Amino acid sequence: MTLLFVFFFISIVFSFMCSIWEAVLLSITPAFVNREVQEGTKLGKSLQAFKKDIDRPLSAILTLNTIAHTVGAMGVGAQAQIIFKDSDALFSIFGYSVSAETIIAVLMTLAILVLSEIIPKTLGANYWQVLAGFTVRSLKVILFILTPFIWLSMLITKNLKSKDVKSVFSRADFLAMASLGKKSGALKENESAIIENLLH
Image 1 (tube, helix red, strand yellow):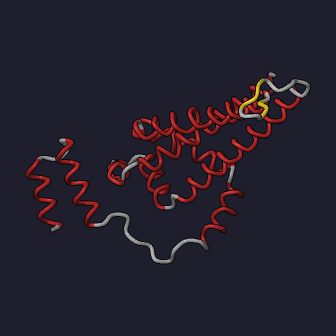
Image 2: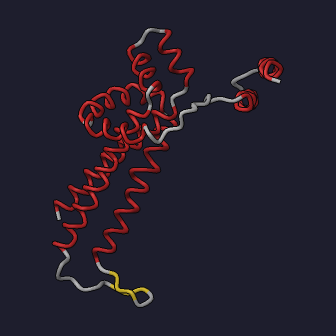
Image 3: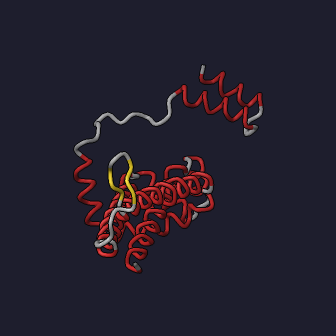
């Protein structure tokens, strides 16, 4: 039973961290990066490098997350079979027998969904400024450890990318951002009007 919980805990912890890193990395705004770069911080330089080639850190995150899920599922499944190999079905639903292994698999899926997806991604998206420094430092370590896997992943995805790289922001995006800024109070009405007049 101890090994079952060990595999479960390892899988959830690593997957939790991967979700936080991904949410933080994708939530960091260009304005925040530029401000850090202008202030000459190490964080700014690292963020600029990450944003310039965002496929590398994302590949590292997805690789580690996949490994965590696979190892966790295999480990928990194997331990469940050993522990409950002689046990009968606990109950049946619509004529289908439900065993302890089935319940553990369902609980594992729910735990991954809630503990390693919903909660960490919500935290990362809301507290990305606080977690930016931690994310950069920890991802540098992960990038170093997973270098061979990242290289292989980049090699595969390189040929799948579109050659025509379009700008991330369109005129409509800027107009929408100006409108949101006015509604949230980040921009004054006259400031929003100036931006809208420039873009119309």
